[in-house]
Image 1 (cartoon, rainbow, N blue to C red):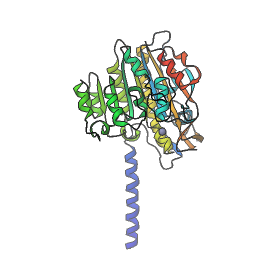
Image 2: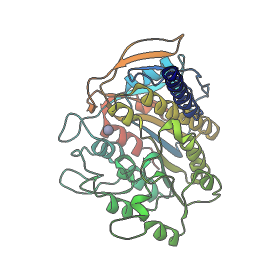
Image 3: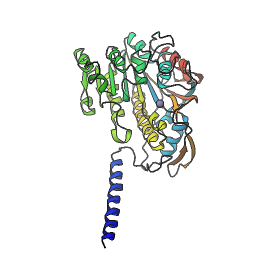
Length: 385
Ligand SMILES: [Zn+2]
């Protein structure tokens, strides 16, 4: 009898545990999914995608550069299957291919790839907007600000991580986090959102960079709600100590932040905005299909709202690409009808496959072809006027 009770209690406990996990996952606004096995993923609630008309023949006033960190065609293809054969990326008609190798490695890291995309210069892995001999080179964001435009970045990692850092700072190493933060704070950036307040106000050097930006006239906030209430830039929003929470837990922070960025950056001279799906890379490093898919869906939903905004504006060029792919993922099997995939991975690191470039809006046809990641940057720079 005692043993039966123990067994019943055990089963009951186990059921409650499993149930609470399900409830936990229900916090996702995007999908309810099966994370039981890392190589499989089933999408239970696909999202609707937008359908927009692409404006042609007009000038480029605004540029929105969207980078999926660790996002290659393999991750995009898998996400397309899981969402039942549709993504907001399907709206893009002009597509190119960019090669990602860095100055010193066939397989790049985010700092060297970001430097190529942001400045048009290949550099060594680990370096931030500098050539291999440590000469600072001008980023697209800096170019835009010089031309009187506003510039911003919205990411899901810490704002001082490699990809946002290459647009607003210069360093011989991505590891100089506190220095990068000080440079970003002094860069003239108009909108900055993501995580990382530890590197701004709980620093080893004792400085409080959040007080410095406030003294310069920035609105500084640490929650999404406070960011949504901001009516005027410039603004710095650091909504977690390090990275933001994974997509399942953070909800719609990225799309909401980007919507706010568009509202605040929009002005008669135009703007340059970099948006990063920063944590797609983490799913690749972890070899977890579910984590990768959730991050791509979050990024693709953000692409949807950007396209709707840009379609209304008519003078906004939207570019979507990755910095490198991660995990060496292969789509092995699955079903469009059942919205499921099975994948495998060949590495927990990055890989060296060339990446798709999706272009939409005025001058999108300039991005057709096969070219270096640095040439992609050059093509964008030529349109910053
Ligand atoms: Zn990575």
